[in-house]
Length: 319
Image 1 (tube, helix red, strand yellow):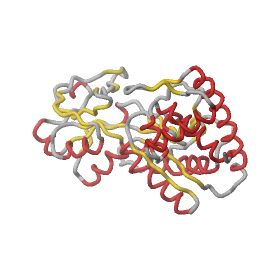
Image 2 (cartoon, one colour):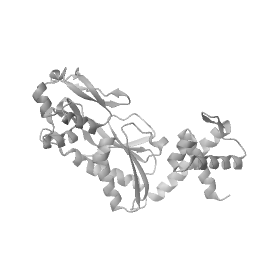
Image 3 (tube, one colour):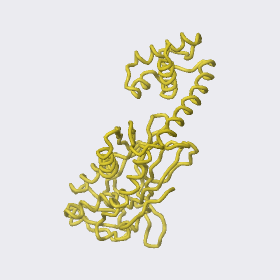
Image 4 (cartoon, one colour):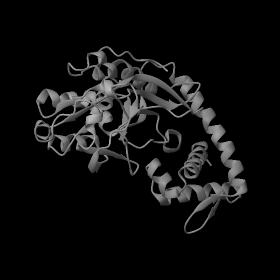
């Protein structure tokens, strides 16, 4: 059997274990489920052992399969490190780069930066995935992710700070004319609001009152949406107050579609990070993407309306 065939079978086996099913592994590898099953069957035949216990509902590793998997993971990690060490000497980023980012921030801020990077480097191939859930970079095969907010401690991940996102509260002129303009955090109580739904739960509006204390206003929430753009659209339609990133809110203030209710000083800022699987060697494609984001994202966050001059000139720095 050719060495390439042996390595392919090992890689498919590791993906099948990490994905939890042959069907999921097939999707990640751009193969059919049948191709994955055949690769595993050939590997089992060559090794002379059964690697998986299979039922109609689930699969699990046999004792031999678990031992083989642990050794395969270490071997593939060594191969990745060897390739990365060679790649780190290249000036030209190339290869497939898989990136995950929050939906709205990804579309408006991350995608333009990485599109420009790909246009400058023809050998670079981009796969961009936009989702507000926290992706598992290692399990799902991502090279890089952009995340907003506190990072969970993880020895398997590395991070670089890209900037700061501030939040502000806005509403349509028609809504404010009909319901009045809240001028303090306390005056938000009872106002109609559009909630951001994440993971099936409302994201609380944790604000800072005039005395500097953290508080949550008692809002009249009748509409819940899991997309920030949909929330902005609903606010423009006059449904209620919207709590939005300042870089996004500013666009609608300049157009006159939304007016400022309370500025960024009433919300805690949230750090923005580039996150990637920790490795001794960082591939040139990943490094180029991180450097491009760190260089350009602060300027995008600095494009704020006049009510937030403090946002201008935010500098990226290493975490």
